[in-house]
Image (tube, rainbow, N blue to C red; front, top):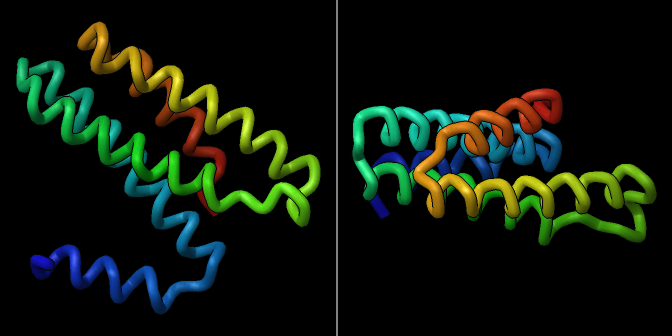
Length: 112
């Protein structure tokens, strides 16, 4: 584990559940910005790495939803995360920054 990863792991473990979600969403938004920048400079590997990071974060958020306790909000988030993951496949398939921007815009209101 490098220094940055260790720092992030400590930050996440000390944070409240709501703060953890906000940190993950913020990280996903940052990764999507990195994917857009990589596309603009023609960096295919950088795009793929950044998009994978964002995809992994959204998958984690989706998997950790409590549909029983979360009710309608959790059900709506499940649909939203599914839509986002579908859109992010287009970033890599088409080398298109538009879906990454779209997903980042959808994530921003979820920040706590």
